[in-house]
Image (tube, rainbow, N blue to C red):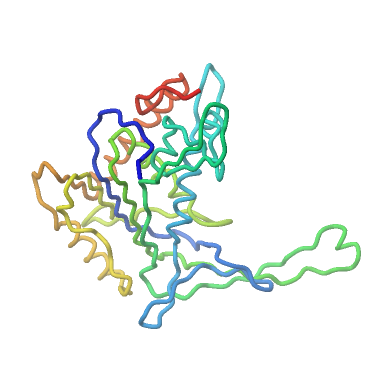
Length: 302
């Protein structure tokens, strides 16, 4: 299947982000609702254990929204990127100049003006999310207060329970981008960093990169044309945080040095590289879109 994208002529690379996130407070990831209780999302492993799960699909949605609500200024007017491009969820715009659709994918199922039906296959995939410590979900009770009308009829508050992931849970996560230029990857870097304080459902929410004095932020960024480095993926059977950290460091070091086809940044260097790309997205790509020039060097479709 054709990509549906017109290449600009920039060098294309594969990109991988490996990170170990921790929850600084209890975090809720909605799964399903039963009678008077909201359940957190969990997964069952072959060893019979049940772990709290940070769904890659939910992370993807938070990242996409972080991009869509990126602030843009045009002619002195302050806008969101979603309004500038008329792109959103689930109504993606499917334009080649859209930094969200180009990487996250898009599907336009009906003709919009001069834009025919367009499909972009997403080049960004998400993985991981199985918590490392084998802690069971916590449960707290709240009072579900009736509305004023129901209160007037004599209805009393009802007990309501919600499950949480405990503070300090660790989640290994992975983002992979297929054949994207550095300019296209800027949006991915921005979305990854901007999504961290917004991960979760309801309140409280937010995760951060785990960090220690040995490795710094537990973050690895790969840019490559040949997959010459070891993937920094942790076995889901790991339950001990110390073993998981050691395994992350060991795999992160398993990569060639000075190889033209493969480049790896670790720890603080990886974080600085993502920050540099995110800054370029805000300072260069968003103003280019606002001025009517495509951030990927393509003219706007009518």
